[in-house]
Length: 82
Image (cartoon, rainbow, N blue to C red; front, side, top):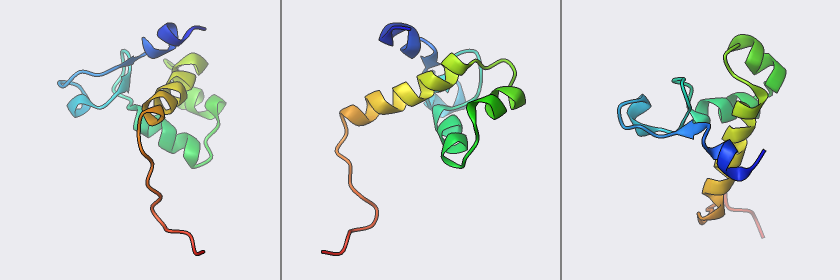
């Protein structure tokens, strides 16, 4: 799947979830899906809970986050001891 196809799965509309990026055709935000994954949910489990989603939708969330962070300066929350 190409970059354009992946990113077409993610939409931003100020009238849906206050403009947060969501999986097209749903009210599931990229942030929500990333949070599920970060807390240990597997792609298969997410799809079982939300059967209208596909593996490609979930991968699009990861890709969207990666693309977003590409152009962002990251500031760690906790400063490491030197």
